[in-house]
Length: 342
Image (tube, rainbow, N blue to C red; front, side, top):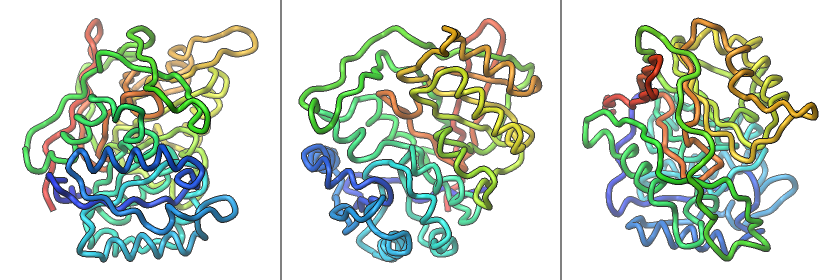
């Protein structure tokens, strides 16, 4: 079982790493705003050289990005590493990482989207819980500051080793999947709404499903299929963060995971709210039907959780244990279980 890193306390020193998109260079105003928001929240923030780089398809060469992370994990002035933003290129960094060093450093690694390629492997190879949580540009850089739910969930989940209690994931009062272009429209907070998907049970089970959390962004998990890095523990709770797809694309990606054996090793499935959802050319728009059809019938399934690209978002401990209760006629209950400290 993966062990939790030390809790993030007031005044913790965060190092910002940019292993994917060179967005800190492309959107310096929003990046600076995100750094200030973290500082205003009581963190000490240090930006790494990758945040000032833009080379080829990423920021630095994969071997340089790995070396940068290794140096920071050895740095006694660093308490945790948070990603600047997502992108598409972290997969190329994986072969250069020292998994023993990451485990021995035992420092929280935080991000989502492209960072999915790293989080699950850290749990599998380093024996360390990492966090599917907010990043500097996308969440902390929001105009007016991060959404309260995002901030509170991050603070709560990353400090669970100190509290020692379980944490139930509740739905936020409002959410938004509005898209504001960071280079043109990033002058206001995204407009909230109260409609759309709700947290719901798609398939009930007589008994709770319990296991380590495994998953992340569906598109990035698809990149790992067929590689040595799609490492999944047995009887895990799979969580999938999905955005901007139509039902036919969702079906294709779920079939890919099923054929890769992901659902055979799962105890249950949690699916995110689908922000900026699209419809098929036929007009078909029933995502729930797609999920029920493709995911094996023995698995309990809950959907509508705020896990990623819509705002706000919760934070999940990848490799940490959780329990899912899906009962007919009731709202699902997803609880992060008390962690074992390292």
